[in-house]
Length: 473
Image (cartoon, rainbow, N blue to C red; front, top):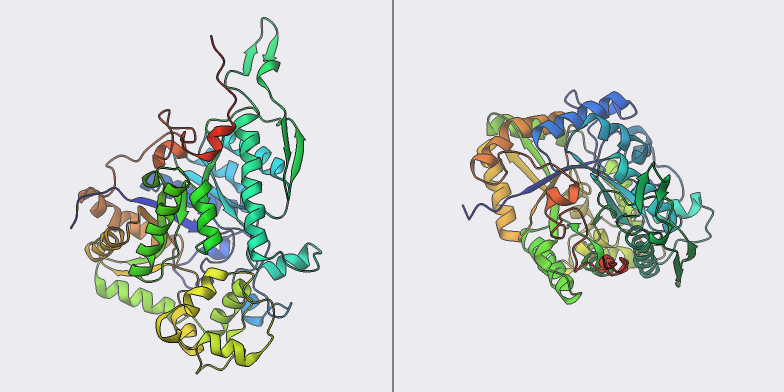
């Protein structure tokens, strides 16, 4: 195929029965009914570490699928994004069980203060040896979250992104500007632990946050965690272009994904950043077996588990739209107009609404949307075949879209990933798409996203301007 541009590989997970808003945990190939067992995650992370994956990514949210404030039957019986544990609490254990695997966790910008994020991620970066990443989100299932946190109404979409921008800025002001390099002396002869002159107050007065004080966490290997972001709406792209080092692009068609990749790189360049320094990835659910026929049979077993009710529970939780209450013969826009006031549509899950509203010819009907999402949910590209066929398809997708890699979203975890590691990764290495030896060091160094010293934010990243001036000798 084309020149062998290296591919990045992450794994998308959540501490819940399955990922992607689909149904898989009852299948014998799946072990995710053990999602509350520490040993399950330790074994999972060790397998990914040994195989050479770049990172394990945990989605997270306080929200979950509801309909008109209630838990749908399909949410509960199917385990559709419910229940879910807090993945941040398992990261230290996973770091101790692995040697090089990056660990990325989702943390919302709308539920606490940036000093809390700076303290948590600074601590995690120390405990992981610089292998931590932060997936910056404005939240999901916003109507559910508003109720849980006692809010009268969910925050408007545009306001959430303005708040997120300020939240990230203030977090980086603390992580990058709170301490100078060399502030930790640890000199027992003094005895002097810290150089007081190299620890700085952060004063900030913004629209959404204000602060005055000191960060108590000393500089960690990366200082700032590797910054991930996944929004594909216009405000989401702007946030990604300004702050993100790794962006997850929603995988729809090849053409639309390519357009999104190009658009984010363009916005990053306009923000004064090197657009090629940003890693762009999309989701991919890969079913691979020794033969294409066996892979197709495994995929069919997964598809047979899916129902309209499972699709509807996920989509309603993500967007506020109850598809099963709409006229299935109409395009989404017309069906919503005919249904009248059905709730807070458009303030959450905007990417998952706009992609159907903006489709050519008025967009698909409600029935077609249900069929499109059935077995796919929030997943990305669907790839099924033997090792050669899967490798061909992943190469084609990367080459035609400009993507730098894929976030694998297993149908049956962790079995699918063990199959991928055994069958596909050797083939990708043979083609020069993966290194013979997996990278080591900090996550930023492994992804190649850092400045010349590899572990730190690039100098063209806006967070770099918060660094204290370098003292003369």
